[in-house]
Length: 451
Image (cartoon, rainbow, N blue to C red; front, side):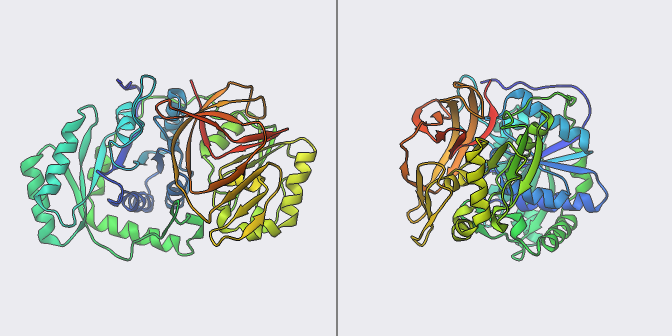
């Protein structure tokens, strides 16, 4: 489908993308963000698509929150507002793409593919391709040329060659690009650096807050970027975002209550900043509590939000934290709204079996048993429709979201399902989640209301 291009006022943004995952775009983005900040540039960032982990690294690099910009899951008004807020808050905006430049959901009549390329089309921001040039020479330039020609509506300004073998390799790559794609600029060639590697686990990188030496890592990445990339040339290709922010912008997810207590620690960290900021704009008061340190929700709160994260890594500790579990039970007894997503949903259940096969009792507020003893990947965009009235709104309200987990459902129910669910192209996936009184949850991470 044709993607709308918006036009208007000044700003300054670009997108760091790659032909494929694993090319090094996250490291390049982090190093560039910290380098710009070190040079006194007022810089903000964003991440394309559904991702909780990379934005936390961005926030560490810039010192400010990193929103997600999702061309598939977000309404145009939501996307425009988030980009406008970024443009109003900083001089430079650096956006990290998702997967390969053209990778996304299958496009349908009502939505484009949600790829990084789609965001580039919508915003008009130029793309810089990070190409893993290890084991390549002229072929890397051909890849760049093919990407630049594939979708003319996507402006590819140039490339960064990553993981080069040395100065001679850089010369070969640069000369090849001048021959095959003279309109593309080489913004630099980055040598391999084994010490700049981030550890991973089953849902992606190990979380930013778990890195004791993260600031030193970012400083080293910034030094690496500054030594090998042409920063002024990169800044020169930035383009404005055209839409002014609105004081009464769209609210992605309706507030669960007037005073919302949000679980936040290493076990519950998968929260979209746009959702929380939307609740604040709608007038809700936000408080945070840490289940891992045995904190219970604020007793003055009338709603509790348990987001996703890694409760499976801390199941024993959570199970033993009596104040936390008792606080959830008290909130349920007082008919306060309680909503859990993915990991939060599992904690609302009867029990969670960890990877070693040991079962840990959970809050017992929903008839749900989950396990990580036998992992199975569930991944993809989701269209969801509320099956019943509740804290998220009236029945038949529609949302867009994403599912990404390895948990196996041992038992789910009996009970009233929370959502009717479809995949990105509208295939009916049946029912998912549970709702009991005002306690609700599912494995879907909600991103925005549907149009």
